[in-house]
Length: 291
Image 1 (tube, rainbow, N blue to C red):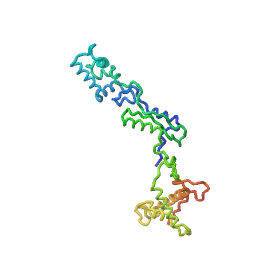
Image 2: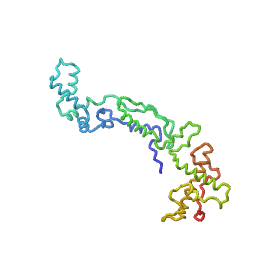
Image 3: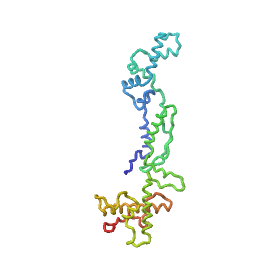
Image 4: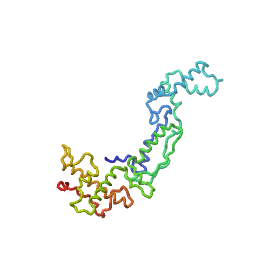
């Protein structure tokens, strides 16, 4: 499986810019209209959303009902009531028309929008293989939790390595796993099984008495259903042996490298120094040597 591509910028400045771009909000948003958070909406579309999805029209309805019962506010009416009616204007006008002509201004935000913002970010890194080690966020608690979660996810997309993170690279344990993006337990179990079979059946034996690679592959159960002694119609015995031999030999090559490092305190590292005997890839047995 191909490794996923890096999704974050390669410099601290680049990461900051990407976070900024991903965190753009409309400063004149309407809290009750979530679609207005990211950018300014078409006036007609916004008015329709306000009419159908918010309770702003009901507020006007209460004002209209009050006026219908008690008449228009006079100079003797409580100041707060006079101010409210003055601000709302014509409460009989079609709501969407009223909204577009200025009603929205009563409900738009008029200050700093409470966003999740970056306070600090690790600057001591650069390049394709490195990434920031921390980020400090200022999280407002005056907006819904799901909105906070959405913002944080967008920020993390721009600064977290995701599946490319080598989490064991930052371990403080006495023995830490060799950093890799993913560890497949089955792979190492198969390598170890092949190593043990080779050690048991090759150690101290002349070449002619060593167990063939294909048999090692079969005994290690590297390919279920592949058995030279019980061939299928579409596969010859030689094909089966060759397949098993290649699997076993390849895994043994890997197992040798992993074993070399495991006993020296590094696991699962599969590279060894150039001057280590036997580090080069072993040759797969030829067709004549399979049996």
